[in-house]
Image 1 (cartoon, rainbow, N blue to C red):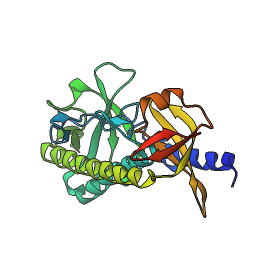
Image 2 (tube, rainbow, N blue to C red; image 1 turned 135 degrees about the vertical axis):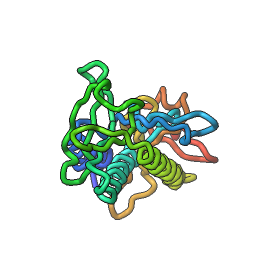
Image 3 (tube, helix red, strand yellow; image 1 turned 120 degrees about the horizontal axis):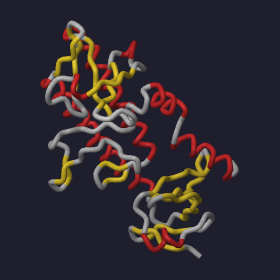
Amino acid sequence: MSLDLVNNLFNNLKENNFVQNFIKELSNYLEKNLINSSKFSDNNKNWNNLLDDNLQIGNKKIISKYKNEMLLERANILQKYASETENKGEMYYVYDANAVEDNAYNLCICNSSKSHNVITKKIDDLPENTHLGSVLRKKDEEFVLDKEDTEFIENEINNMLKEKIEEQDQYLDSKRIDGHIYEADEKHEGRIWLYDLSDKGDSGIEGIEEIEFPKDLYEAAKKGNKFIYKNGEYQKYD
């Protein structure tokens, strides 16, 4: 398989059409949710952003493969819970501050049949103490803050994120193989895409989004440069 074809396939992995269409339908609902919870922490530092524009949670970088999984898992959590609690009323989730209107939030309807519906509401028109990540219910044309469900959803999402981060760490560790030769492709904001030239399986050369790459090598790295993983670190390969 040619490297160009592998590159195209890997780019599809980074941003597949299903995820992109899903994100578009929800008006970036899955891209900018903020979780107001102190429970999700690392070394006593709160992680308030699910995913910021640099694909990070706090100071933890998230690779595209697991970003996509996190986004879909979060949608599943919201839709599943909305379905299980339909008797409590239509469920809305506060996922973002509106980029155009001041003091306004974007809300999505979590029920699966209406999950593409997004509305914008002034903060003053919402219940007191509503914040990003809040769960609201619609009752008699009025929004009601569901504190119990907000806490439940926060915990569910935060637990999912922890699991996915652990999976990501294990996945990346499995791709860093002692003695293997890697060829550099694109790099961006501390991330570098590598092809494992030593592992040509049935699907061809595998692409890896590496987020832990020596700074000096990263700064000098150019497309086509080769590196070897040896003694627990990447080294230049001549």
